[in-house]
Amino acid sequence: MDAELESWKTTGQYFDYLGFDVFYRVEGTGPALLLIHGYPFSSWDWSLIWPTLTERFTVIAPDMLGLGFSDKPVAYEYSVPDHADMHEALLHHLGIDSFHVLAHDLGDSVGQELLARYEAGDNAYGVPVIESITWLNGGLFNESYTPRLVQKLMSRTPLGDMVSRFQGSAVARRVVDRTLDELFGQNTKPTPRQLEQFHQIMDYNDGTRVSHKVGRFVTDRYLYRNRWIRAMRETAVPMRLIDGPSDPNSGRHMAQRYLEVIPSPDVVMLADDIAHWPQIEAPEDVLRHFFAHVDRVVAT
Image (cartoon, rainbow, N blue to C red):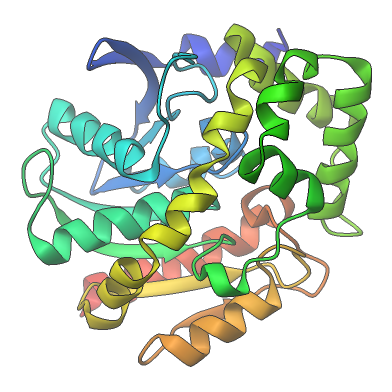
């Protein structure tokens, strides 16, 4: 395993979520900050901004089931509500009663589910207070989400089950690399080492067996769309969207939809060449805009 990934793993911990081991990292002092990663990677997505965040927050970052260093059961019905249950269980395990959220990609959907529960008062574990939410690129509005063809085929058709046994092959790897290339900005493409790290994260614990199953979360975006958007429109929780505009899945067009749907929207557009992974492509800018949002919340 890559040395940086090994270090990340060895400085983490595991907690029992209904009989499965969930990997998480917690570090720092101050208000609690929950980092909710995206698909198909892990908490490692936050590694470039982690040291700065831990200077101001108690930062909590789990790997969702089926991803990263957490268990990846095959006979499992992966869903956004279950991912939300896991995050609530971890916060309860750590005794956290209030927290800020920074979410990306699949993490946006999990954050939307947590917000909907918070507004309705129907949490699975306790009643923690959400102090603020910062969204990064993700499918906040399924009507504006434009996934790549391979994503749609793998997660919304039987093809995912058919080809999952070949996911570790050289051909499958080239397909993944091409998809990743499309999702990064033209000036921020991943290095060969980063690509290798991404593949090691996906392959860990034979994760390619279940990647397509985890990817079916896109169906939940249709199922829960109105509940989630209602919560976003009615909440008093301060929210900010920090968006990489050149993301073909959820870039400028998703930010425009946010401006149309959310009352008094707070949207920050990053440089034109930043795409789907702002925390990797423009970490300093993400930190600056995130801190500005939280500082304003605390001052208010």
